[in-house]
Amino acid sequence: AVVSTQSTGTLLKLNLVRGKTIIFVSETNRCYRIKLFLEQFSIKCCVLNFELPANCVVHAIDQFNRGIFDIIVTTDDQQNKALEQVNERENLADKHETG
Image (tube, rainbow, N blue to C red; front, side, top):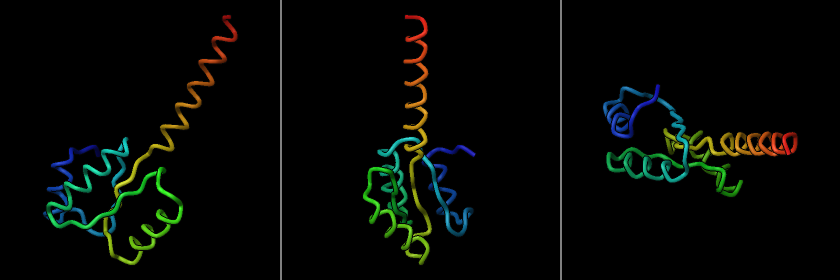
């Protein structure tokens, strides 16, 4: 389900979402906004994105698995980048065919 940042915070604060949770967002800066929002309610979470070094990602996942964080906020940036690359290739192929 797609919910707003406020709705997400409310669901988590009221314990309507229990256990380990991964929240996917479309942009890296949105990860950090959600993290800051959740921390206002004393909800511990971490941010993962593809701009972070691999050792940071591994460390964050390890902390998540050990229960230090119950929530990971992450992006689907890699998927978006892959789609952009495919679209660029298709556009180049179309230009090549018509040109």
